[in-house]
Length: 194
Image (cartoon, rainbow, N blue to C red; front, side, top):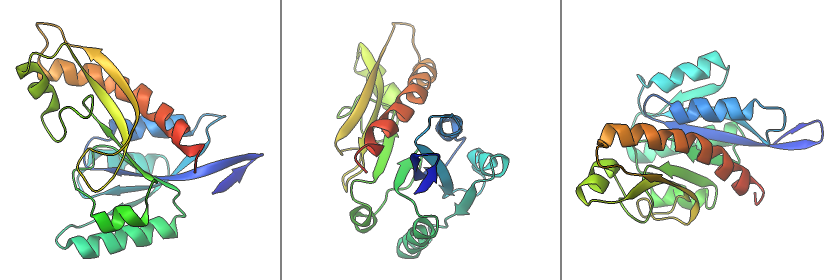
């Protein structure tokens, strides 16, 4: 952990696979004066992930993980987490499932943001499924990662109203705005117990 003028900062690694809008948001929160965390590492399974540009822009270490062999991939991940003294892992649109072995090694220190009101709509296509089931609300959840997909203990959730003319794309945009508010709040809540 980095100590800055009396504030103990938590070292965070963010795992991404795509555009990295949540990553961008977390970086801007981490740069605020009273922030209790610092993003030290960005990991991606996709070398073309747009979110990797933020690593260069903000001088953050990055590592591309090739997943031909999950055992080797996760050995590399663990090595990088250790090398960067990571206290907390934040999954932000990371499209790979972590093994039970890796989760156990980082127990209680991996969180994820998911675009639904868990336990409803685990996995993919959450907004379309919510529309098809005529849900009145959708939203997002930040939860601890355990060995079952999108099943860990929920840290925080935010509801978003679904209107009659909403498409999955419209809902995605509304929910993403809420994700950007929710994820930093959830991190602040989690790091108190680290």
